[in-house]
Amino acid sequence: MIFATSNPHKVEEARAILAPLGIELQSLAEVGCELPEPEEDGATFEENARLKARYYARHLGALCLAEDSGLEVDALGGAPGVHSARYAGVQGSRAERDQANNERLLRELSGVPAERRGARFVCTLAVADASGSILAEARGHYSGVIAEAPRGTNGFGYDPLLFLPDRGCTSAELSPEEKHARSHRGAALRQLAAELRRLAG
Image 1: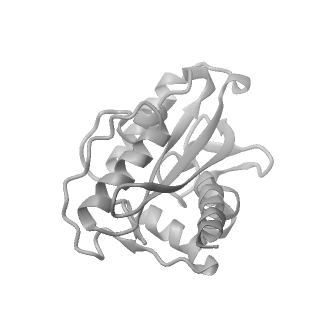
Image 2: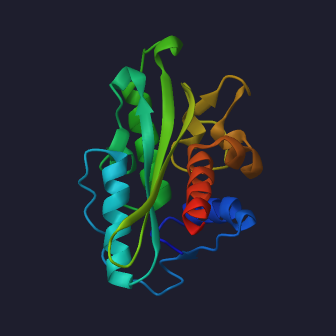
Image 3: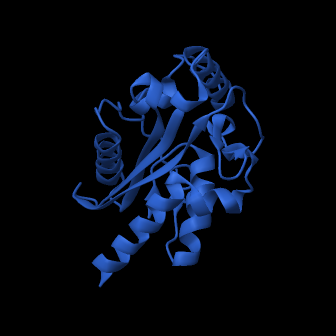
């Protein structure tokens, strides 16, 4: 199955979770795909995941997995939501965009007390066949509180800002194994694997 993402961190994470379940993934780079990315104009994570799965599956003539994920912050009415990756409106490398997004989020939450800084990562997945039919979908959540400052060097995106009260650390301070066990993407991928096994009968 081709994982329709250009984010190498997401490919690594998905492989680590799906490989033990018997599902092999190839990245877009590995299959030599140079298609322009489709416009993600869906109003929900689910709509964007379906849009990307259908687009790549039809163009590549293969089974494709796509995902859309992001951060929902209670005090911001669910923002940045589907705009998480482009929240700061900054171009540049992935690391530069991540830093700008994190800085904007902290500015938006300046002065907001801890009890109103609840947040969750959301991951939605969709698998489409070569005709563009959606075969399976899944959704996972990963909750915490937005910290006052970034901490940790593991993970990517908003991981340094999602503080996990039960662990006393941020998502970026967990080991990869710990993160896979509890993350939104891990939950969605395990749910998806179970759905694919059920479909395979």
